[in-house]
Image (cartoon, rainbow, N blue to C red):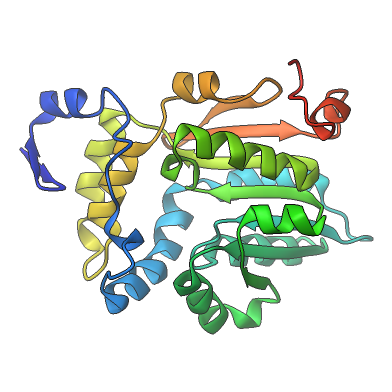
Length: 258
């Protein structure tokens, strides 16, 4: 029997629980009055969680490294960077490979940016409290744009705006990496996250899985031109390549294929 987020469900009951997105569920760490000590511990533990289960090492090898160069600097924007741990990994891997990568990491939550600036300041990454819409208004543009575990937070309307903004900010490739909802993912995280004490990791992680998309749902929600791919373990990738023949259509405000 699971007892997650105040709900007791068995193995068969978890399938019913996850049948539809829990769009109205709230993650405790997103509340403005959540415990600051537990929040800081959550950001710190994300570094372990993301390294183990978010799959960025393989994404770096297959999606990012082929676009990096030892002779010129590639610019990368991380939207919704949280505590900045993914950016630190990407910067470290690029440096080891002799590739030049300049990372700008943004998050609208001042608590996240404060944690990142205090804990990750030596990584050579620009952390900034901002929303993607602000950078669009400034006319910013990057070779690569990515996000990690952001899509499931968004309402349908917010998702459309987020994808339009990330496309407008990129002249290369956009990669959004997010959870993929399934009973197996829920059960495995329920069991595996027991070690993460003193934080919001376990409870909010289960809520995040309930809020996340299946691959089919994400494909139906995404505008034409975006590609959905399954990624292990239990991840969806939503990607847009601005360097192909469809780039001009997206740049002009018309989704590719629309």
